[in-house]
Length: 256
Image 1 (spheres, rainbow, N blue to C red):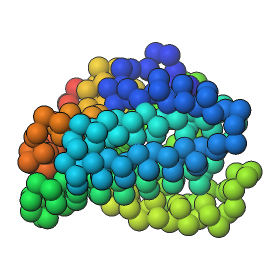
Image 2: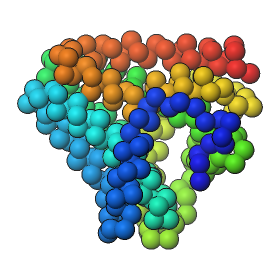
Image 3: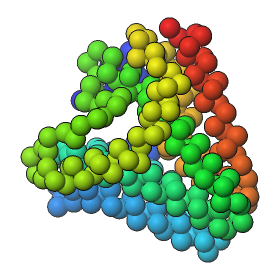
Image 4: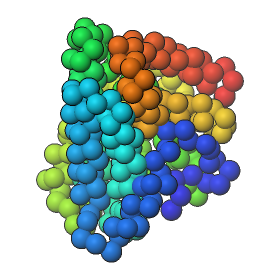
């Protein structure tokens, strides 16, 4: 099922890995590979990218970061093809993402000799950027006629395990998920509490917002590394976070 109705679909600049994700999922649909295996695979790709940064192989670091984005799109596609939805897999995917984001920045901090405090500030900025994108996107999905309404803006209660997974494993991953993402969710909600009242978000706004999608954030890093701009990655994402205020202002003033 499409996540959005036809009239609500937009050009998602962060979802460039989707074609590869669909291709990979189709290659794996008749194998023993599960969506969780694919999630682990994108984690491995991210770890290889980190190794490449440490060893100053910046072209290959960029390659494996982009590959990670493509593989990241494949686990959900494979779950749909195999008809094996999983809350465990969904939360594992998100937890892996935030861990890798933190490790990417800390590795860049180590290699570029950036201060740890600037790096933590950049990490908070990146997470708030991604949370803003997800916040508006999930609201749009919930309001989109015929779209996907399974995701919630805020998740307060562990869902009931689906066939093929245990309730204990779902509860554990849900607990970790809420700990690592909860504060960011609350901050963004506090900045725009009335966003859910909007009937819909125009396509141009969602495309602009997708500059904050995880895929696009990683693409920026993947491009800056081989160009030798590693020293500027942390400062860039700190400054990039200022657009959060601009986007929220556009939503409040223009989109009501």
